[in-house]
Image 1 (tube, helix red, strand yellow):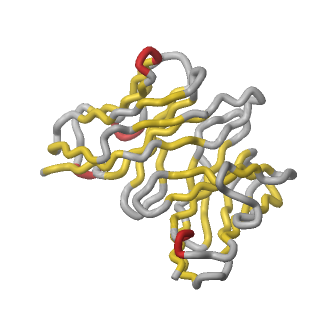
Image 2 (cartoon, rainbow over the protein chains, first blue to last red):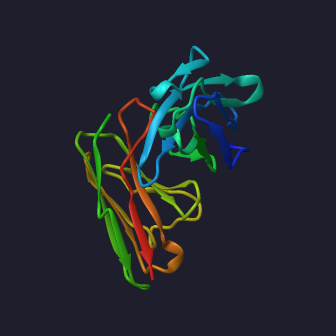
Length: 117
Length: 114
């Protein structure tokens, strides 16, 4: 079974500073990888995804993530954060279904991002 | 991405009662999923709901407690039965299209059991 570890429960970053949120996964093959963001009182929004190919993927809101197979990692980065980026960030892994369908996702515990003015 | 709505958005229920949550999508989708997010926690998959077949439940979740219906390709319901305070959570549905693996989430239903 797959698992996801987000080692940082809380991260505080100054507005305008760079950001990196860590995500490590455990899965027997190459998984599908996702980052979602959940703002207070909001649902989950998909930031970006990795299926195959280029290991550096671009997402919405200026976020990017890099898949590193050797480290089983999929860290999320942003060069300059804005106050509106304050939210809960979840890394998720999905199994590759041999039938071509989607499987349910396994989520990490989340990282709470705080932006300092 | 699909537009997903859930009803109710929130509810306060008494112990021992049941609540049915609806999930409506604006387009036909192959896969629908139900997740639970307990207070301050991450999301946990409850079950996968496919049209025309029984839902597939994850370990720790049973059909008697969380019956699911999927009558067509745009709608599903999750019932939380015989509720206890431990069922207080946000319940979210998500969808994935044919051949797609990313999931899009509804706004969630915030349930409080007293």
